[in-house]
Structure formats: C-alpha cells, structure tokens
Amino acid sequence: MPNPFTNATKQLENAAELLNLNKNILEILKNPKGILEVSIPIKMDSGKTKVFKGYRSQYNDALGPFKGGIRFHPKVNLSEVKALSAWMTWKCAVVGLPLGGGKGGVVVDPKKLSAKEIEKLSRGYVQAMKDFIGPEKDILAPDVYTNPQIMAWMMDEFSRIKGYNVPGFVTGKPIEVGGARGRKFSTAQGGIYVLEKAVKRLKMNSEKTIVAIQGFGNAGSFVAKILSALGYNIVAVSDSRGGVVIDQESGIRNQKFKNNGLNIKNIIKFKKETGSVVGFPNTKTITNEQLLKLDVDILIPAALENVITEKNASRIKAKLIIELANGPITPEADIILEKKGIIVVPDILANAGGVIVSYFEWVQNLQNYYWTEKENISKLKTIIEKSFDKVWAKKECSNISMRLAAYMVAVERVAKAEELRRGL
Image 1 (cartoon, helix red, strand yellow):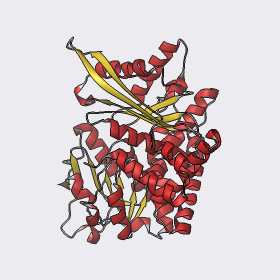
Image 2 (cartoon, helix red, strand yellow):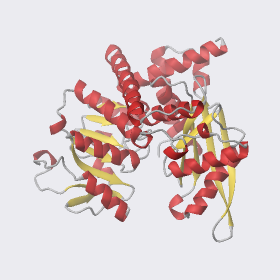
Image 3 (cartoon, one colour):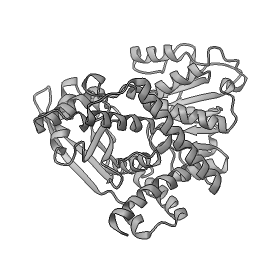
Image 4 (cartoon, helix red, strand yellow):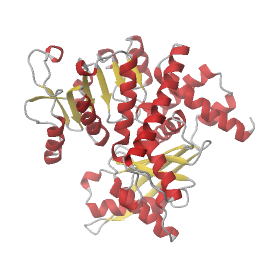
C-alpha cells in the first residue's frame, strides 16, 4: 500500500520545484510542526478497560490556527494522519482561508462500540489533547466515522474542562449547539460547484453525462442526490461493502436513461434500512475496483485514499475525475491519468466546501452571530468558484495539471506567510 505521507510530500516537492521555492522554506513545509500520540483508556460496557491509540498531526499554522477533522477508523496510522494534515494545509490555502492544517484520528472500529462507549472515547480524546487544542490553537471537525453528535460531545467536554462554553473549539456541530446551517452538505455542494465549472470548461452536456460515485457516505450520497436533480445520469454507486450499477445488457453507453439513472432517493432509503447499497433492486453488484473502471464521463472517488494507483490508472475511462475523498489518487497514477488526457480536479480544491463552511461556523461561534443557510452557501459558492478560476488559469498559463496548479497556488501562499513571519 502506498505511503500517504510520501505521496503528500511528493506533491509538495513537485509544486516547489516549479515555484523555485526557497530551500529553507521547503524544508519547513515538508514536516509537521507537531505530532501528538496519546493513549485513551476507556471503561467498556463489559466493565473491562481498553486502551485506544489516538493521534493529532499539526502540520502548519503560518496562515492561522490548525484546522482539521478527526476520524475513528481501524486503519488510522501516523503516516495517514500526517498526510491528511498536510493536505488540509494546502486545502485551506488554495481557497484563501486564514487557517492552517491539522488532522487527528483514533485507531478503532466504531461499528463495534456502543453509543456510550463512543461518547467516552470522544471525551477521552479531548481530555488527552486538551493542552494542545482549542479555538485559537487547533480546531477539530468531523471526518470518517465521526459526526455532529460526536462533535457535540467533544465541544461539551472541552467546555467542561475550561469551565465555560467554547463552541468554536469544534466545527461540524449540530445547529442547536452552534453549528453552521448548510454544513451537513457543504462538502458535496462545494464539489458540485467545481464539477459544474469543469463541465462548462470541458463543454460537456449534463443531460448526457454519465457519472459513477465511489463512496456513499455523507458527501457521496449528497453529491449523488444533487447531481441527479441537476440532470446528470448516476449509473453506479458504492460503499465499503461493494457497489451497484444499472443492470442492462446493452452497456452503459447504449442505455437510454430514465429519471437520470439510478433512483438516488430510493438508494439512500435502501442503505438506511439495510446498511449498504448492495442488493438494491434492478441493479448488478460490482466491486469498488470495478466501479472505478466503468465507461463513464465523470468519476467521483468519495471514499478513502489510494484507490487509484499505477496498477489500475491505465484502465480508468472517465474524462473528468472530481476528488471528493482525500488523496484517492497516488502520484504515480496522476502521471498515467495526465497522459491519458483525464482532467483531475484535486481534493484540496474539490472537497474544500466542508472546510469553507467550517470556517464560517468558527467565525460565527467567535462573534456569536449566525448566518442563514442561504448566506453560508452563497458565500461558499463565491469562494470556491473564485478559487477554481484561479487554479484553472494557473493550469492553462503553465500548461500543467489541475493538481499541480492547485498546489502551486496553495504552497505559494503558505510559503509567503512563512517567509514574512520568519524573515527568510
């Protein structure tokens, strides 16, 4: 399995080379500012105590406080967390937010824990990290297998420790305790805005455009729902258990679509009832790997990192890839996709909608003044579309990939801040 942090560092170095970046600045940007590893003892429902390992990588805060999610997943490891914190740094920078990058995780399978055990783990993570996190230092947010309820528990625990209410400690909270309206679907909505911009640039017709989505969690399901409503034909979706594709003998390209492909509303309902999209009526079951190779126009990886590698990149048929997941394509695969003429809108831009609205939430928490959902989404649209245009212009001007262009924009901003602050 490719090392995520090695991939993240390679992407940075590629951008730094084109920018002719100061070598001293590059050395700073290649390393996290701080890494925390903690043990979290939890008394389980059985009465036994189990110790969980937790991480927090605080990558760079030249532009502002560290900001990033925390995931609960059995495969969480230090390399992954470091990579995610680096990508978060560039994500905030490419869309012009006054925030740095951080990321955290706990090695755990939350599906095997009760709600009470998950609450104890959430509060235990905050207790272990309390001296290193906070609204002025490092702001937490939801990620894989964490949700608004977990954020509420974490905010409550940090507030209890401090002795007063600190809503700005985490974002992605329920609206009732200071969450931002529209945050729930903001990652997907941001992805839609950049997808639509790319579709327009590539002169694609939405009504004839065929889409496959790998990952049907919060972001993936919302993207599917919005795209279907816009007239795109969603022909395949998947989750951790596998995927489904429209079942037809004539092949996807010869299919005359009705109601924009799969009935996304019914699939969302089906997954809630059964726990997976697999088995949805009138579909053919496929693997996640098979979904990636389908003959579609747009492919949206919305699950985990490293799903498109040098081993399968040559078999990708999509014309456009929107990286809704973090790091789904390895650097080696990037080279292959670029040679094939496939446009990739990189994760640090494509899925930045979530952190943009999280930034709005943090700002609103600090000033105790809240905007409407319409205001939040309108501001999101302005920021992310402006950022897309800047990256696209860089791509066209320098004749490089969208990823390299996005990294150049982001790295240049962070490097300039480091240079000014350190006098280098």
